[in-house]
Length: 423
Image (cartoon, rainbow, N blue to C red; front, top):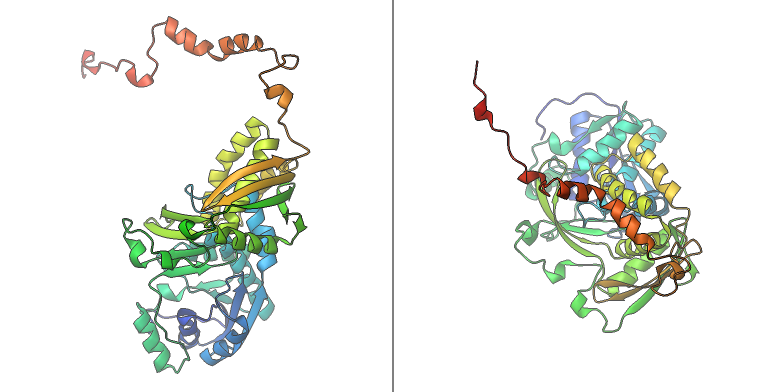
């Protein structure tokens, strides 16, 4: 079942999950490319499959071997936490859970290709989504010599039923169960939901859809307090207990999920040009982002903080668009790291029925001074100094008013072209 002639390759490494699609891709690649297929599975904390059972499934599908990489700590320390420090959030709501994991998976896909002598890589992303771009841009950045194969852009399989029929005709063992109406992606940072009733943006998400967070209505009636410690912008401990990056995320997922934290419903602009509606559960990430922002508000000067907020919008776009391995991201990470020295301290948060409230923050590098901010004594700040500052700060407004000019440029007189005659 192919739609065009295939070029010759010797060995392909397939990004493999063990689901119906990638199980079918294995024999399809062998049939249409006539070469060895190696399956690669990335453990990014998805938690939805017993990875120890995947090897027999991959071999039965026709793969020569299955290679599994445990990438949980690498994902947390080298991808999630740098992104956290940047403050990146896509279109105000999406904490980029799927987006940030794809470059890491593709990086390991390239590494496995190198280790096994493969000359091609393949993925199961469809031709309508963002993941195809994220996977392929990473491969292009790390080794453009590798051929990239995307079966969904080549074959004539167009439905789950087509895939099941193909599997049966090729004696491929697949566990055909009642398919969820939702398309989901899961890793240690988040769980996403698309499709089903969500395709109508007027429909409220069904409560039973959520899997890692309780509804705010069903969250405990008493608040939960959590203290997060940072060192130079990086989370290092929760409630006084030092933890690895991955364990911090897992622990806060549990605490946040139990309190209804981290749900987001978003109609987003996909890179490929269409809008899509998704619901995301990101309990731990939402808590960490709130804590990091609060600590930055205490220790960063105004100009740095405001500029960093603008930069975060661009950072989020780059991550969303799959441009992680680019000079600009490298430069932005250098800028972010240069700002994070004083982002050291502890933030105390109050979690209650889907809400995060700040209960306290402290840092040895705090720029907040009570004696500066107080309305009491004036030995630090002379309030009369403000008069001269206001005069200078508003000078342009004063000049405009003295010249009887309108406040808005929209109210300026328009040119009268009727005065000019055509030659």
